[in-house]
Image 1 (cartoon, rainbow, N blue to C red):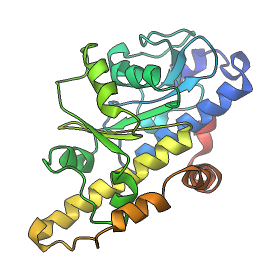
Image 2 (image 1 turned 90 degrees about the horizontal axis):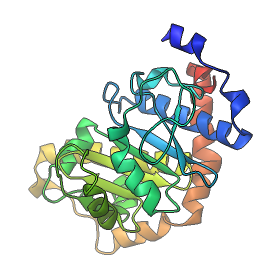
Image 3 (image 1 turned 60 degrees about the vertical axis):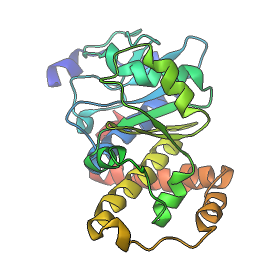
Image 4 (image 1 turned 45 degrees about the vertical axis):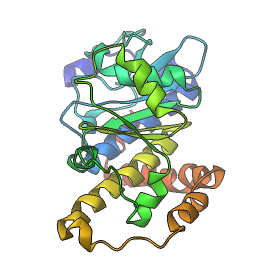
Length: 259
């Protein structure tokens, strides 16, 4: 890794300030995924669209752990997952299959994040899906779509079905697979992922008591929480308060994600 970093051109000098900020935010998201222990060795991806008419995206190098990723090491790729800028790192075009489908179908899906956490996978394997039994689940549930498992996502024909199932939702449970969120910004996608993963974790723990012993929320409460946690207010909370706080947390731990 050290050799590759030394041989890499100065990326910051080659990209716009807007792209550099996206690189810093996306690198931060990778570090946060590692910090919360949501990573899966080098597998799964978080991606973000680069502004411009070229349809270019930033994604992780396939051979780096999430806690190693920096703004400079992110790979700029096209819609087929191929690098469009010099990089010493390995890329995985097949890993961009799910992401490219959503990026290209949704103009508002600037960021796409996909995980394979044990809790997310556990809920994805439950026939009833995400239950509205915690506040966190009620925040997430109304915005969650479902997609049936079709095998490891290398079949390009699956993209059309995935996009159709996603519709206008901003989160998805991929059955027997994991979780996925989208957002207009990295902050939006990450915070949606945070609430979805926390909801899945709580559900796995609460089901240890048996579903018959759960306290159901009062009628109409999930709908009330939906109204309370939807719209631009939640986005402002994510982008202006929660995300800057998370960046400060990373800066205290290890600011090298900014390199």
